Length: 304
Image (cartoon, rainbow, N blue to C red; front, side, top):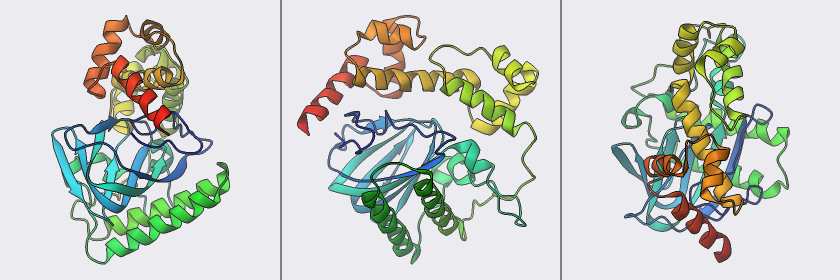
C-alpha cells in the first residue's frame, strides 16, 4: 500500500483518493517512495486532474484500458482526466515525482504572443500514442524530478507560490516530451468562448454529491442541452453522465476510508441507487468491492 502524503492522509492503496486540486490551486506536485502493488495485483485509480509522473528509481508497469507499458528511471507516464489507470511494481521500491493539474486550467494556458497551444493534447491521445522520453531527455527529466523533490520536502504547507513552481516544472516536462514527438498536434485555433462555461459545469459536478442532470448543467452554462453535451465532451473527453459517475465513485471511495459509515449509507450519500449499484461501480473502476477497498485502506493505515 502507498504511504499517504503528509497533507492528504487517507491510507489509500489507490493514489490520491483524498487529493483534491481546485481552481484555487490548479497545479501541484507530490514526491514519494512506494514499495507495494505486485504485478499480479495492480492498484487502479482515476481522478479529475491530469497527471504527469516521472520515475526516479525502480521499475514500473503502467496499466491503462487494454494496454500497458513498462518504464525505467527517467521515463514518464501520463494520465488523462478521469482515465482509469494503475501501476504495478516490477522492481521495488520505486521513487517518483508526480505533477497534477486541472484540465481546464492547462487547456486555457497560453503565453502572450505565442501560437495557441493545447497543452492537454499529450494526455488526451490514446495511451500508446503518447510521447515518451528519448535519449538525453531522460537525464533532463530526472533533473526536473530532483527539483520537485527539493521543493516538496522544503514546503510545510500548500500555497500558491508552490503552485507556480509546480507549473514551471510541468511545462518544462511537457516541452521536453513534445520535442520531436511524431504525434504532436498542439497548435490549434483559439479556445471557444464557451470554454469558461464548461468550466462552470465541471465545478458544479465536483461540488456536488448527487446526480446532475444535463438540462440543469446546460441551463447553468447558458447553453442549449445539445450544444452543451457536444462542448462538454469536447473539453473533458467524457459525457456529463460518465464524468459525474466517476466523480461520485471517487467521492464514495474517499468516504469509505475516512469514515466508518456503512456501505449502504455511503452509496446513498453519493447518489447511487443502492449498495449493489455502488458495488458494481467499484468492480468496474477499482476491480474490488467497497468492503475490500475499505479493508485494504485500513490495513495500510495501521501499517504506518
